[in-house]
Length: 71
Image (cartoon, rainbow, N blue to C red; front, side):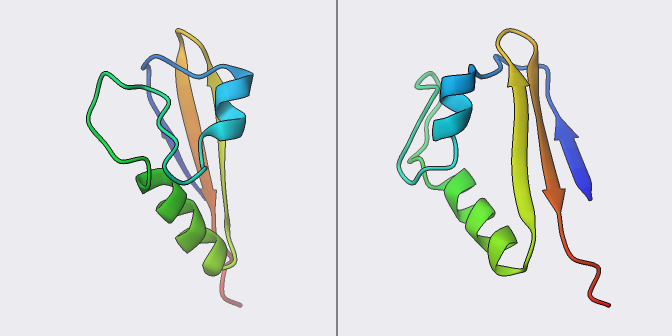
């Protein structure tokens, strides 16, 4: 398991539901194409893992990656 936390803008519950969609950008003040988190999530799922996010507006976000142990 790997957790990455930030103290950025955070995301509303509605935004969290949209976060991993292809070409979906939630913050337009930074450049991007909206494929990064989509691709990361797909790669993790293809390896048998999961990627989740917990976030609060104005507080930040925590991304959790869980991968199988390979036993």
